[in-house]
Length: 163
Picture 1 (spheres, rainbow, N blue to C red):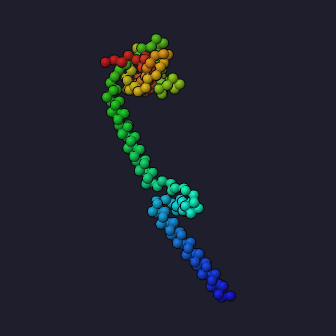
Picture 2: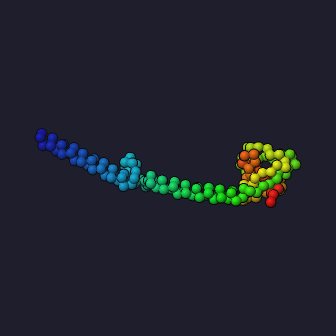
Picture 3: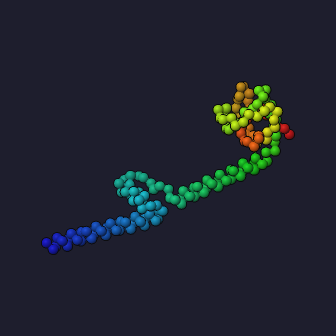
């Protein structure tokens, strides 16, 4: 009877040692992979069971990716500001037969109208869309302008660029 109890105790102690070893191993791997123990244990289970799942990206790699994208965004923003500063001094005269020109929120006819600009008004030209389109058979581009402290888009066929 004592022998069976000793063997049972040894079995429980052995299982406890294995469990503690596993927990310490998972914790160590979590630190190494910079992942939570939960994520690491799931990854290990997938590896043991033959599932080819990969670890999700580490916090450091995600932060590095965000930093790289922020650098790119800042660079593009600075380039756009520099471009706008160089080209903002261009003026254009509105020339429409209908009496007013619609300034839109986006460079397309379906976008919201921000303001109606009266004919013969002067506007600041910020920049032109690089693509050409056809409107009522006329080739042209969308132009980003500023008028009455508002910025929006108009069709360049209704503008007379001033020198």
